[in-house]
Amino acid sequence: MKNQLTKFLNLIGLTDSENEKKESVYIQDNIKRKIEYLSIEKIASNPYQSRFGFDKSELIKLAASIEKYGIINPLIVRENGNTEDYELVTGERRLKAGKLLGLTEVPVIIGEFEEYEMAEIILLNNLQRRDLDFLEEALGYQQLLNNFELGEEELANKLCKHPAVIKDRLRLLELPGEVLRLTRNSKVSEGHARALLELSDKELQTEVIKQVIENEYTVEELKDLIREILDDLNEYRDKKKVIKYFNDARLALNTIRKTVQDIKSSGLDIEVEEREQPEEFEINIRLSKK
Image (cartoon, helix red, strand yellow):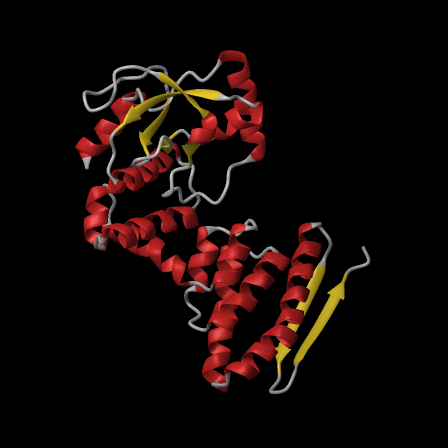
């Protein structure tokens, strides 16, 4: 793995100690020894890219830099079978920024890469740059496992990761698709997503994440809520009743608690007493006029 990483860093002009400089291009023996210019339309994206998207504002900044200075580091591509087209190995941000500018050609270095190298290099590149969020990273791991029949320990060795890190990331993909979608489109953290795994029921996981987003729960607040739900499940042993209870009474109760906390944070003197009865919650609120 170290050799593979070194090969990649050298290929794109970096060493381990120069990972932020991105100033030169070192061309290895296994690739052509010159920079060529290819039609931008002939370059397809890396099929193993696990990123969901690219920040538009960052692409615009990169495009402005390219317009002023040009593309300093060539893209790395490989020939696409028997066609005259090419597949991108690394450099997708530069490719997209070039398209924004309306460039017709971009500088490239053409290399020979196997399928597993394509997948491994794009994941390594994103991890080195810290471009992936926790779900994208998990999907990258899953892609390598599925496409190349690797085991988790073997993958961990290849990526110089502890097996527990790989396992923990992959567990997040057990969450329902709707939960993953909501997580991706909000400010929900990995801690929030990981806490949801304590709930085994997918319907409950989906309902809870919606309330997390709506009420902006912290991870600790979410953990407290999940403990309450699990206690209710132990008491009622009826999922449908608990879900209705959660959607109605628990939602109202947590909304009140959140509002009270906001009032306290504003500096006002407020006291709350809660009593849970078999069929209802009793809540007394005292707000000082002073």
